[in-house]
Image (cartoon, rainbow, N blue to C red; front, side):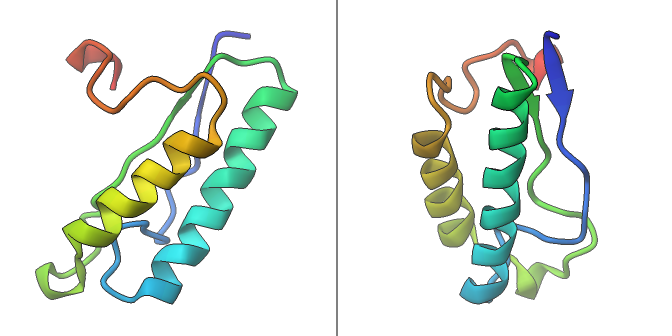
Length: 87
C-alpha cells in the first residue's frame, strides 16, 4: 500500500484553543500509527480547516502541533518537501 488519506474532520491542530488543538493532534497520531500498521508510506492530511472562523485559528498552535506530528512520525519528510501536486 502506498498512501492513505487522513479523515477530514472538524478537529483542527491549528485551533486557537490549545486543548481542542491537542485533541486533534492525538487523533492524527492515531492516524500515523494506523498508516504504519497498514504498511503505507505516506499519510495525506489537511490543516487550516475552512470551517474555522479567522479568530479561531492560531498559526502558532498549527506550527507547534504540525512539528510535533512530524517528530512523532518515523521517517517523515518536512512539510513542503513534496511537489505541490502531492500535498
